[in-house]
Image (cartoon, rainbow, N blue to C red; front, side):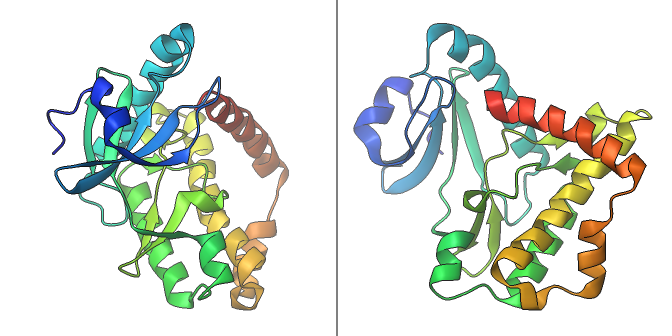
Length: 224
């Protein structure tokens, strides 16, 4: 799908902007071609050095993430990369959690489905690492949770050797703790005592791993 799409075609096919570009962030556009809609993360509008060094690297990593997650319901379908500078992905009709909370509210079933989705993602060898941001979790019009924006994702095979394997486990745990944090923010009555203890548990070793993880994640988020 969108096989013939070129970078030069994108502005004229644009039907919406999800995020404007900045010096260090790509523009997120919604496009339509032959009645089909998609989201395009486009680094081509960024500065020459940034788009050709950082942009191409991030496009390559996010493409790799989507390929590993292919077939998991709850992750947007990946269509293609254009010229190494833009990713074309499925548009997910729905609302992010902040908007959902203000309208229909978030159900216990949604959290349960989100937990199952994250379990499948971790089994595939990835940690998302940025689930505390409400826009990255969507309640689809089909009632299912979707997780978007894989630019800061961490791959298990990059952390497979000790002690890096412990850091990856911390990333996985933080993904799960992000669900608890969302519950605490939007539905504190749904948080069990076990979940609260898990969220608050901070041994010395955990704090050291957490500090290393935070530095790694901050670096990825700054360039993504």
